[in-house]
Length: 388
Ligand SMILES: Cc1cc2nc3c(=O)[nH]c(=O)nc-3n(C[C@H](O)[C@H](O)[C@H](O)COP(=O)(O)OP(=O)(O)OC[C@H]3O[C@@H](n4cnc5c(N)ncnc54)[C@H](O)[C@@H]3O)c2cc1C
Image (cartoon, rainbow, N blue to C red; front, side, top):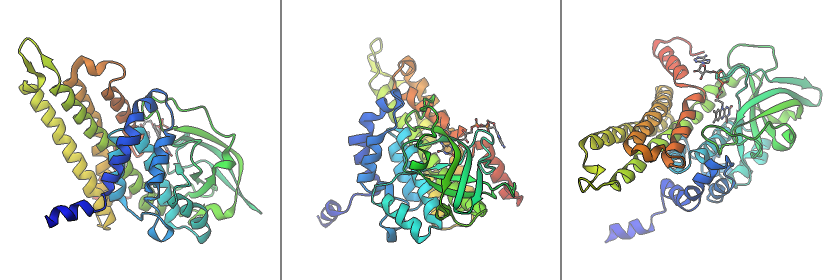
């Protein structure tokens, strides 16, 4: 009896808290978010009300002070219902972690405290059309002026574009073109008011508002520089890469998990009148579903282990984190494909949940670092060759 009493009074786990929001708020809107390519404002508000958007803010500034294990649990749980929302949430957490890594007292007050209170959403603007997947070579220029900086350039595929309150943006002053030798600034949304490209209408991840933004002589105060000028290689490998890779890996693990659940429900309900059984009695269907399930279990376990290793500061954590993103992304695409086969013609109809997951899963590998890049980096690390 003591066991059940203790259980009843235990605070809900992070996953349970997230699941509650997913059931009440996120799942019911998932289809419309995709169909209308609509940024999921109500979902993000619900996550903020629950304190979850403060996940990456250190506890001393009012946040949850969680690391990559927490990020993985929340992103995976959201992605089982709405991968677009998981991506919006994940990119907010990545940018928050960058802000928090070397925040000045002023940046804590202006950015981290409001994020912890659920009043501020941030996001990451690294990619540019000119350099594509090689995001560590920004061409957006930082001009040093007597009273601050001026920023010129164009960022592409900014998740939460036009909706976030601030944008963590990579820039170069043009003096050093070595990979990773760039700077990061945080730019408030007001400074980008008329700079946004057309609304995002992607093949998948249609709710993430992945827009381009043109920066034309945008004035930014010196206080918005993150860390020291030019030392972003540290940010890339210590903060951006682990947080981004775990956000994407867990989102894709969630997509794969959801695909197996959809296939299970579909198969169990598919009655075959000529044999008076359901598809569940077909041995080929049983083994194909088991194979998909096995892949999901392996990907989820890998993502959680990689996140834990990074949180615990294990020396090989970077290798695990890179492997986790590549593995989970491939698993998501192959498991959703298997689930499509298992569900047959019905899954091919417009509006079926698997069709949405198939389109959403495809974004994982397009998002840099791609599996090819990660494999190259893993190989170089294993062989003691510089990654960049
Ligand atoms: C839904 C979505 C959301 C996104 N969100 C964000 C975001 O929030 N913030 C952000 O900064 N970016 C974001 N991105 C951008 C993303 O991370 C990539 O930078 C972008 O998709 C690259 O596309 P591209 O067409 O420029 O690729 P290109 O650079 O033109 O590359 C095309 C293909 O060539 C291959 N390739 C190119 N260069 C190399 C190389 N050096 N090594 C190995 N293979 C290579 C790869 O297969 C790659 O897929 C997002 C993208 C998408 C689709």
